[in-house]
Image (tube, rainbow, N blue to C red; front, side, top):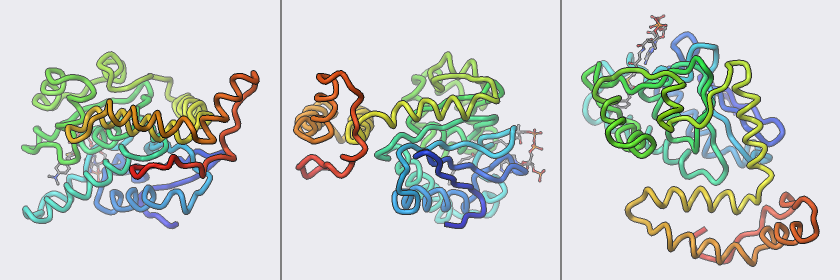
Length: 270
Ligand code: DAK
């Protein structure tokens, strides 16, 4: 698969997707959003060994400094709506992925860049990372889900302050607010993020998929997360993966889930 504005490379089951416009601080233009969608819609076919994905930015300055402001100038309502919907589709694809998608934030994560990081299952930041939703500085509001995911992650008051002032916060402040899980020295960012991905990859793949789904359901007013958990728990229990995990515990050995990834619970809602 050939891309112009992203790079994608799979190694040891981890697909690293790099936003690759460092001269423009990896600003998310329409092509980049489309390429990200293409990669995420097809990763299981193109890189079939993938069991975790890391999204990061090229260079040492930015994860992504926002949506590409240069593309905004001449958009009419119709095109702006398309742009926003396309971005939302990408973010939902990330949020609802069956495998973990982790943002490794290595510099500015502003506007659409912060929104992309927030759609990932969690975020690790390097010490030089900076986060913010500066859209109001431009007379705009976020268009890729920022008004919804930011309060979900850090609470309404803090989110409103960031959104309304447009101010940036440091990696440490983002950590204190719960926007990022860990802050690492810049050099350690990718190795540390990979080490977390590897821990998750050792778990039962169906368990990983259903944990993500149940946690997402909590934030979806149209779903009953408690009921979903009851159902997923019950349907997982008789699967070969769960049987293997339980047997391995009783036999005091490590489980081997990998030969069992085709095992699906027999329910409609998979
Ligand atoms: N878009 C396009 N180019 C950008 C960019 C961006 N967001 N951010 C930086 N660049 C480009 C700069 O123009 C510059 O390009 P050249 O002039 O060299 O050609 C290059 O990257 C380097 O940037 P600077 O020279 O400015 O670098 P500095 O270190 O001095 O400053 C900075 C770094 C991050 C503080 C600064 O670049 C900056 O303030 N950037 C803009 C940050 C920003 O406002 N981001 C939010 C963008 S708005 C919607 C959909 C989506 C959204 C909203 C609505 N709908 C469809 C409704 C989302 C909106 C946003 O994300």
